[in-house]
Image (tube, rainbow, N blue to C red; front, side, top):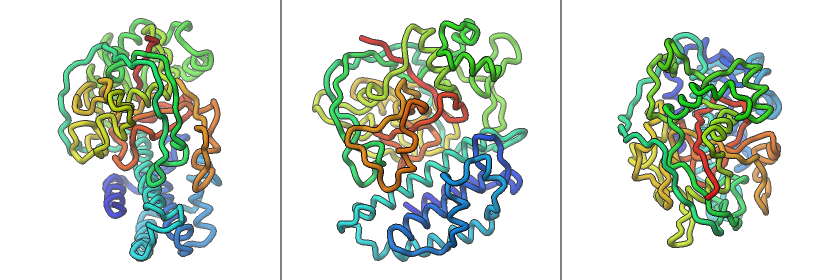
Length: 424
């Protein structure tokens, strides 16, 4: 799994020029070469130093790739490893990691090693930075990054409207898993929710275009106050990358390609404020994080929790239940994966686009920061909104029904859309 993860990282970097690796393509993103070096240094920190008391690097390298020490605006000025040197460094770290892994006791009492926790954590970290790099490549100016899709997506069928009913009652939110789940997903705890309705699929481009053309970006009544200030200050009048060469003809720019907007694709690259405004315009609201997780994970017939919407079987390459793992380089039409339905009939809850929820990012009952507080604890509070479900750019190792992502409500570089809810 470690070897496969590294192959994917390097595959994504193929064809990216030295200049593009070193450039900061947007102030909110790191130069891609920083992400690459950081992947290797994080692996050294956790799979060598913390797990086995071994290390290769001096303090300067650790400091340079410490995300908490250097905000993104500082990273382009750091003395970063260039691609060839970074390759040598990552290979040297990996060689020693594999030597120590051969002797690692994954059945002992050390919680870091037990059941392979620290290895799963590092695998997920590399997968997360794969998606971050793809976000950065999507912000390149000019010809940019032009990947070729390596999988054929199903056509799907138009899913206009339609909501599923989720009955009221108690379900189990979160997890007690200590092998793969990260600290903010724990502990499992009961949550009692009233009945609600949830969109069967994420909101499609065609539906969102109706909101835009109905003056949604000009009508103050639909917007959160801070959202209204934000879109006016930034002159935002449509999702990121949308443009209109002529009336009622929407196009989008994706990885350097210009193409007509797919009316059946899920809307993507919208901020939380835009999602919230659309929901109000549609007479609905965004689901809470608890509502999202119940609709995705709970099986009312058995009274048990599913690891994925369809059950506990892990996603596979070329899966017919979800569009994950990056090789499509775009989302599928909404409703294209009926085999991935949740117990309540909701589609597309894993893959294609991350989904904004109404909830701020807060700790669950019993939360304990582990193995380091900077991963989750420093972000708890109302400033961040929770996203769920992963996207086409999410690797299968880094997503499950309990996985929690979070970001500022203004963020639009993410591969993020949303679906709406209503009280039942």
